[in-house]
Image 1 (spheres, rainbow, N blue to C red):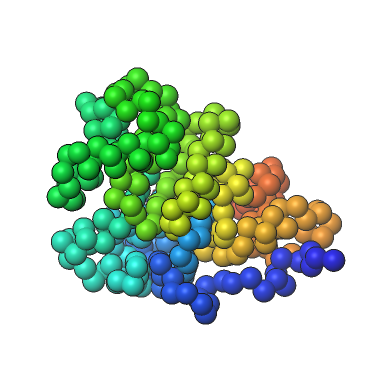
Image 2: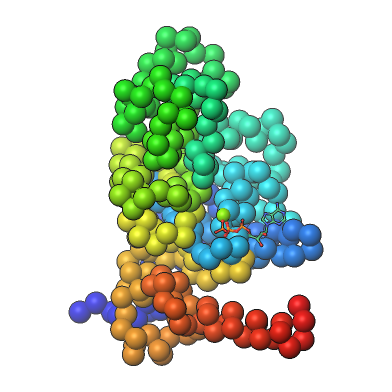
Length: 295
Ligand SMILES: Nc1ncnc2c1ncn2[C@@H]1O[C@H](COP(=O)(O)OP(=O)(O)OP(=O)(O)O)[C@@H](O)[C@H]1O
Ligand SMILES: [Mg+2]
């Protein structure tokens, strides 16, 4: 019989033995305008795994991603990427590290005046000295990987939202990255297109052996692609565990879940999208307090 209580499983959390992590966040904090939006973040991400970072709106998901890619610097703590402390690097050295990872932004962030093929070729033209013929072959390979080879000569305005995501993904793959970062890859897509993007993420991770970090609040997508998941709440990591751990928590019967610590009941409510639970109770209380005493 499997152990139904998630707290008692022995899956890894935080640092562990084995291969060196590709990304290591140690005691990371980020402060905006005097407000701490991320605090004491400890997270290791291992080679070849897909780590999903989930949490409610404003919990700090995108900020944590931007810290990992070096767009923001932490106010406390350190971030190691591929063995380098990225907080200690100047812009030139940071750009060298950036060549080793690809990013898929929410909108796909394509240049509208360029064809899909030209968009995918851009990182190769900017960061390599390859001949145009070699670049053309590389572009075809990347477009084939995401199923867009026949659409190479179209402009972004001529393709659908799902195809734009694929094109953005082909561009993120242009330099054969070791790590792929995704911010809300299925946002704004219909459920079928969203599921197709999930399948593509899984296939690419398997075929290319890349490490993926995916920020999302779409739970179907999270459970489809994750090896491990990290739950953010109000700038803190409540839990880092295997997908199976979170599945068990989601599917646990109400009577059993009632005995869990508050953090785990909160995660469970988030995973299930329940209308009632610690998240909504907290909101009701804080709204009431604000009503009574002002902000
Ligand atoms: N550049 C910035 N300057 C000031 N505050 C910021 C900045 N970026 C993010 N924040 C604040 O940090 C907090 C976390 O924001 P973040 O964008 O990381 O949340 P998120 O979890 O990605 O939310 P969503 O699901 O809505 O995308 C929010 O309160 C946001 O207002
Ligand atoms: Mg975000």
